[in-house]
Image (cartoon, rainbow, N blue to C red; front, side, top):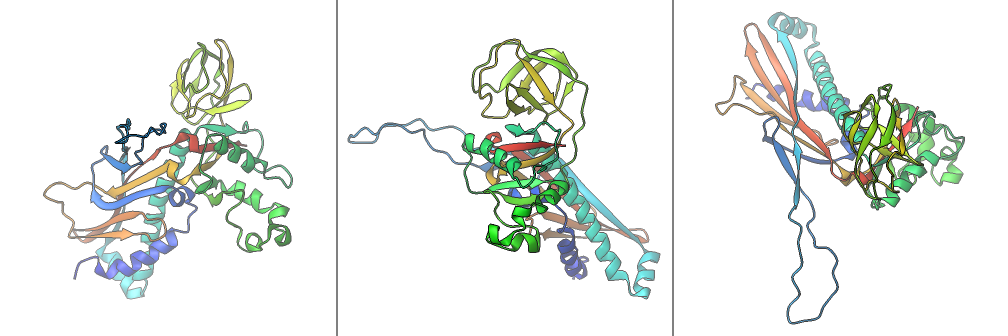
Length: 378
């Protein structure tokens, strides 16, 4: 019998408890997960569709040749290898066993380890998604869903996705717990007669609302603000431009900040000590920007995010091992049936103590920035 066999039931019980965290991004993203090992910094590939552009039909003996795109897969870099170690000495083991608390404490340790890994991954994805968005609604001055009996915030994010050509199905809205509380207070959603269901007043969710599945995330936090100002376009730019030179301005721009030209708030996808070149999420500018046009930076806001499932991809693997292995005497791949995450559990006997380690390697990427929009709230 393997050293971890007696713990398998406890591990899955701990997994159920740990998965109760608000991890909306993990659950809503497209996942590419298996137990194969990769090195930190290695790229894993996700298949994407490969079709030609529409062409006119010309009758003939054979169909005419069409130009096919070269790229039929995209890569996600495994950026992190993370672990949580649980150490138990001989005295602790004997004492817990004698008191009848060994299984309970072991489960609590596993639950906390899994929760920490989930929270770390969730915060990582949240940062990636916000930084990879196309446009935003709001200026950070109003709380989410602060309009009385209105879902305007959600409607405006839906408009951004509609204008960008995002598919109607598979849309998600991941919000802060504060935004969720404000949404739950809406009288229109708690009126079963108007809503056609009592699910919201009973469970706090009803799927979907305005075409969005609702999730919450602990990983969405208020963003830091800088003292940057004085930004002006350094050239003329046409509709669709995604790279703009800021000829003037000072302060640091962070990926995920909003910059407003005219009435439209675009999301900056790169970090920049201004002035310099900013990258906007696709589809880029909706209106021309002329040389000298001022741009207002929107920082220090709290984000909530609307996105299509296929726009955000999460890849996880087992952490890398030396070719000859290491000193672990047993390993077990723990798979969550809710989130799909695959963790590796390993046990390392040491002098008068044992270390059990839960680890995972992961990376995430925004594949289609045009299918991601951000609510910039207070």
